Image (cartoon, rainbow, N blue to C red; front, side, top):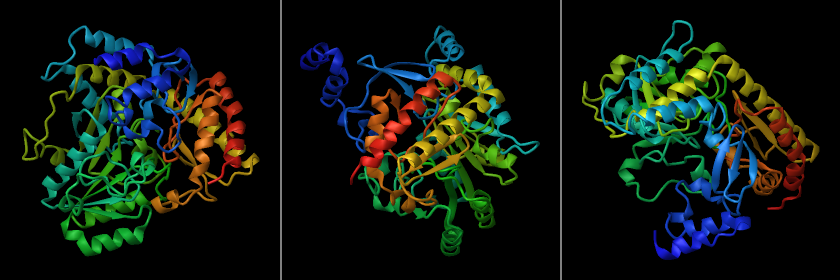
Length: 453
């Protein structure tokens, strides 16, 4: 560590340690963060540098504790540092951190994923490939779809985020939306041209793109429920329409459940929809976040005839030195085994309670808003009706979110630092934590009401 940086860190005062750490970070890390949304670009102020987390709370470097509604962006379904998950990782670490070779745990986790994603006798997953990140899972799924169909074009939806691989950042949500970037520098135009971006929840746009390009489209990729432009659920029947349209033209449907998979239902959002009577079959499903229990792990799965086109059986190459890392696999196995129906019922109830309180607080403060839900995921948009498309999500009084965010933080509640993100509850949010959130919401709503553009 350079001497100046070491001295800077050593001189940090406890009362403003987050400020000092951010200043030090910006001297050695681009923007001071390792993922853009962490920089607080859309809300302003200094990011909280977290030192620890347990249950439903996180503690920053200055010793401030917050009730957490980020949950590591989803993975902490059971709560932070769940003792049995931590013990599983610790036990795995005693046997070695990485092998670069197959392990028994990989087989167990792949089988568990395939077994959970079912509704009755319907099972869309017969094979699973473990990778390390959600970006890697979606990137591999797209390559696999192109290899399986012999086609190049990909259809995606404006505002949907599928990781930062080339060709997928056009009109993406999440951090890209926060930074107001239409795409990304460094993506060659010929690669971007292979992605066709259409409006979400728009059957006419879907029909038109397939009418014009249907015989050249390899796949449609879609978030099972959009949650990177705020929570925007699919309209009834829309995901089924995607599957039917893709299959009618010889294309595949890639269902991105990196965020929703095992977070909103034991079988993910696909299972939640199947239980509600919406029957459709995706060809490839991608997973991340919860599937690794907070450790770096992701996966893609689908029917055997498609998945077996991956090397070493087939011609579609994908590899990763740390794929199926034994510590990540241990965390994933422990998390999924502990994620019982009772856990989902607890999270659902907590999420519903906070969403009601959020709606009531904004209503009482006279703030124009809508709260949208996708299972136990929800978010508020500062517009009169819940958005259905990316354009509608952008057409809101987003300037109200920054004061709302900071007021919540001042009351000891940590929210996602962007209006375009979902709120996450965990099984560890008990009555005490929920009361703290409910007490903070009216204060934050008043701050939002007072905001000016």
